[in-house]
Image (cartoon, rainbow, N blue to C red; front, side, top):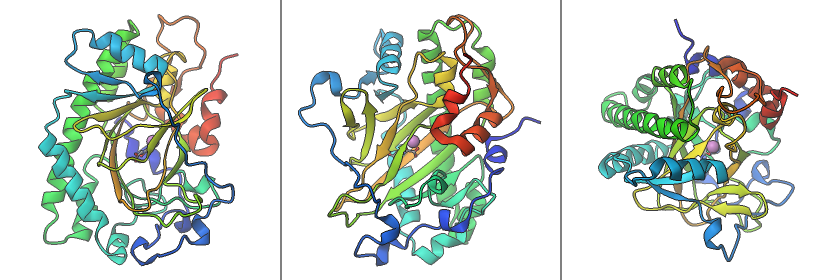
Length: 346
Ligand code: OGA
Ligand code: NI
């Protein structure tokens, strides 16, 4: 039996203080637990010129392979339009996510992620790396895990939520497959079949994110600290409230603004390895908003836990050693952003 991502993620137990989110509804002032001692520079670059705008790729463009390849090489992030996912389905999933986060805190805690678990309600998985907490609550779904948690949240009415999440995950999986094929084509990869088939058979993970309105007069709070995503690709739907920013050498933090109907795609660590370092695994973060509640839904796509990931053979001498997904996630769980440098071959 293949090792699923949920089995892999479940291997690293966390402490409750790194799992339980604030009761945001009852908070009027930023609590000390969420005041970052170094004031967070929340500014995004002003006077952005065209070369500083996150690329938008029309999936129906005749030269889509080239567009995707360029965006991956130069940015590691882009927004896709004409992706074929019905807007009604995105709206439906978003409204179910909103319904979940709108539940009273004590109700949400019924679906709290267990210390050794990977799914359910709770803080971001990277929380234990920091002494301060993020202004964020999340809900993680892997495969069919939503059913057990939704039954705890809505014992008599859990099916609508589960159906919306199932439909959403199916659409994201099939879009992730299409984008992965375009990306591997742009790399002129020859030995891509195992990677594709292992990714198609893997469940991926869906992360619902909520960033409530934040009393952040002194720029001391952060929604999600700068990080890279671990797997191959992330596809993200954000509501109409901006907050996602991407780090660019020489330009600093650039906002990836909500574009109606578009989905954000970013490269993760494993695709950086597969591309032999040609595609950056992109640093991104979320800044809080004082007046608007932000929601997003991130689908993480990657191969099964025991799959071996390595630079494609046509991309020159390998800059990284090969690694199983499981081993990579366990290195990342210990070393966070130092995980990739640890795999360097020389
Ligand atoms: C994530 C993430 C960004 C967002 O969940 O890994 O980066 O906009 N989310 O919520
Ligand atoms: Ni991320």
